[in-house]
Length: 130
Image: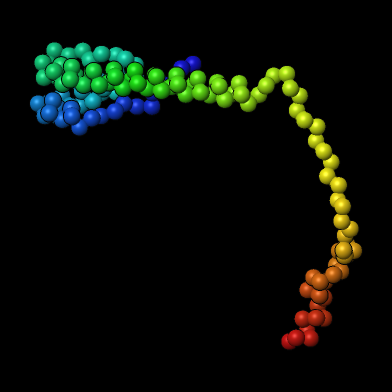
């Protein structure tokens, strides 16, 4: 499944063509831009101002789509190369080595309730300081 484009670009240079349109025409044009970017459906209208603006915008949208597809293809190829380099098929994984402790433990382990923290569990120690 091919990944869809995340959106379309809007350019400031379109502003001179868009100034000829009223708000209703701008809404129709914006919907047509989104439709064309998502599905490739062309604008169908008899309004000459709307068609003028559409013809000014269409080459930029086609160029952006072509550029997006080229970038996606380059990134797909680069990812394929990384996968080929990362996982040689015939080499088994190296054996794990066991770590050996080469130093003795300096203090013996104490049972639970003994050692430095044992004083906090003794209720008599608290009364001595009150």
